[in-house]
Length: 544
Image (cartoon, rainbow, N blue to C red; front, side, top):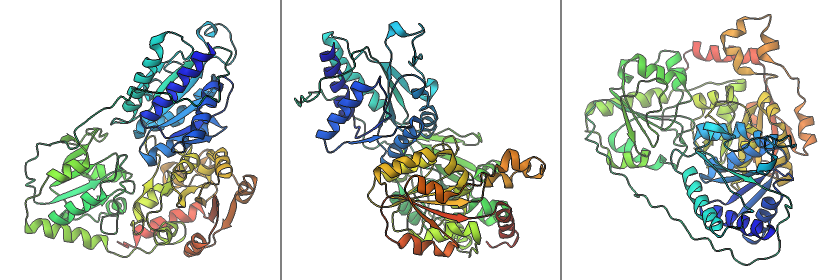
C-alpha cells in the first residue's frame, strides 16, 4: 500500500506541475503527511517550483490566493482533515467570485471512519459547494493499474478547468489510511503523459463599425492579462475617453479617474454624456457609475469572457470576448463630435485636486511609489480613496479582493502578492483590516517578504462614518465604529517587523526611499470624524 501511495502521490504532484502549477502552499497536519513530504521533496529538486508553509489555514488560503491573483496561474493549497479544511472557505469563496484559479488538496480520513464517530473527521467531498467549479476524489493508495493513468489525466484536466475563464477553484479530496509515511529519497523521474489543450489564439468577433457619435470606455476591474497597451492605442486612434477603474490595471494620468466624485457633485454635464459606453471587466469600484448609466439610459456593451454579469441589469449587449480581441477588431467611425467629446472629458480630468490628511495619503502614494510597483488595496475606505484620487502616474498594477468586497485575509493576500516579485510591493489598509488578519504577518516574518504595509490608523471602521447608521449616535461606536485602540508598534514588534510612524502624508516618499529588508509597517494616525469633514469639504468646494 505504501508503494502505491508513494507512486500515485508523485504522479499527482507531477501532473499538477504539468498542468501549470508552480507554487504550493501547505498548512501542516498529520493526515496530509505523505502529500506534504513528497511535495517538499519535489520542490527541493525542481527549482522552478516554490513551497510555502503557513501554519494558519485561514491565512494560507488567502496567501495562495494572492499568488494566484498576481501570477494568473493556479496555486495548490494543501491541508489536513477536519475543521482545518473549513478554514480555507473564505479564500475559496473569494477565489470563486474573483475568478482566481486555486487547487485545493484536502486530505481526508478513509471511508470506514466517515459518519462513525472518528475524531477529526468531516464529510469533505464537495465541502466548498458552489464555490468550486468541480471536485474529485482520488484514492492514492489504490493498487489497481488504471489508477495512476487516471490521476495523470484527471489532474491535468481539472487544473485546466480551474484556469479556464471564468477561472475558479477546484477541489481534490484525498482519503488516506495509515500508515501515512511515503518512501522518500527515490529520485527516478515520474513520467506523466502530457495532456494539452488548444484554443484559438484570437477570437473573431462579428462587430460592425461603431457609429455612435460619442463613445466612452469604462474599464472595470481586470482579473485576466493586462490590455492597457491595446486600450491606449485604441483610445488615441479613435479619440475615445477612458474611465479606468483603479483595479483595471490600465489607469494612467491620461485616463479618467474620480468618477464617483464627479457624479456625487453632478459634474457630468450634457457635453460629457455618451451615446455608447463600452464596458470591460468586472463590477466597478464606483457604485454610482452603473447607476448613472442606467438612470440616463445610456446604451452599454459589456465585453468580457464572462460578459453579462451585471447586477444593474442595464447592459444591452454582452460580447463574450477578451478586451484584447475586441480592441483589435473594433473601430469607431471618425467624427469631429467624438474629438470634442474626448477634449471635454480631458479638461475635467485635468482640474487640480487639493487633498488633506487621510485623503492625501493616496496622492502622496501616487507620487512616491517606484515605477510598476505592485500595490494591494484593502476594501472600505482605502479602495474608495484610491479609485477617486490615484492617477496611476507611476504604476498601474493595483490589486484587491473585490469578489466578496470583504476585509478578510487582506494581509495574507498582499503577502502572497509580494512573494511573486523581488521588487518591493505595497499594501494600503486600515487598522481594522490589519486586525482581522494579524496571523498573516507570520508569513512576512518567516519568508522576509518585501512588502511595505501602510496602515491608516483611525481606530475602527472608517467607512461606517459615511453611512446612515452614523446618525445612531447612542449605538454607533459600539456596533460600527468598533474602536480597538491597537498599539500597532507592538504588533510589529511581536512579528519582528520594522515600524515607522508617519506624521504627515508628504513624508511618505522619504520613508519609502529608505532601504529596508523584509516587511515594514508604516502607520499614519487619522481621525474618522475629521476624515468625513475633509471629504465633505472636498465635495463642497467643487475642487473639480
